[in-house]
Image 1 (cartoon, rainbow, N blue to C red):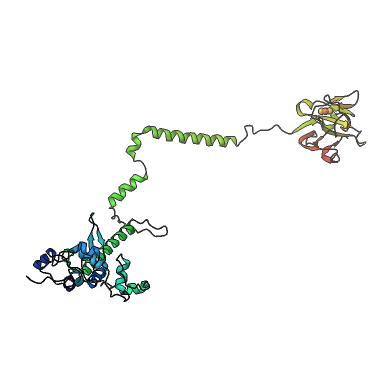
Image 2: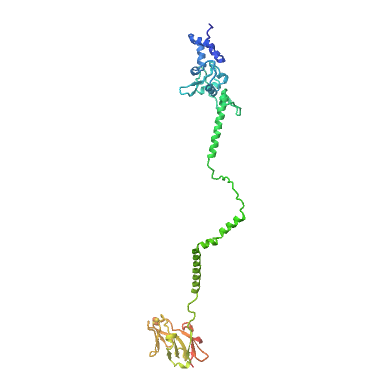
Length: 391
Ligand code: FES
């Protein structure tokens, strides 16, 4: 029977990666455990964490994929991960979730921790007793200490990856690819910015129409055809009625522009020769039909004259009456009185009566023209056309 190896030998063999013979292992398990020496206890306390002992694979078998992934996360090298004792930094929980159990590197007692040991300690590893913890490393120093993975490196299929670094790189590339896909989807779903010009749509240029088609279209646009008109005679009748009505309205409007009576009564009248009228007398023969008196008198300016005096009151237009006994014209409306000469002297009448134009015709008769008047207040009675000498 071979001599049983001590714990120290087993640990040394595990660090080297060598397998312990099953027989030796069985003997090691069956044999009572020797009393650990103080040195061995110190080594176990500083090198093997309790979790490592719980999840360590059987000596001699290769690491599983989960174990490799955990080793890659803590930065262990494949060689170290394959070591039977120093590797196996992974502990599987009851729920199947992988829990990191980073074995704290075992520095020599009294020496400061290395950067790798500090990283492992910050991820949850137990700081070995007796190791002096140096001040925390700066982020730049930590990033510099972490090995960088090659960016463009040809990787084998995921199922065939055995190197934890390759596995980590494959996972990183897969994550980056997924990020690019998500960014592309967001860019497609993003709305168009207000200032952005819309993409010009492709236009389809229609072909050149034939002459027959163009002729038929122009005929259709010009109006209804003869057959269509004949189909709807009431349309023709309506348009004819509208045209006739418009013509009649235009004719009536033109007729309205002209007076109904074109002939006016003559404004002149012959009243006889001057010798037909007596002195200081008023002839009322033409008052009713023509609206004037023929007066012969010397009481206006001392001369024997004849004139035609309008029979309209200058107050409000009533026809006055000649009162031969009183030798005056008297208005029946408001009582205005006028001398035989026509000058007002009583009542509300504001001014004398008016005269018409008189003249001697070729036959010697007196012609009275009603189209022209003469007013005393305007000094028009001195006009030669406003009177005639009786002699
Ligand atoms: Fe002749 Fe008034 S109308 S006095």
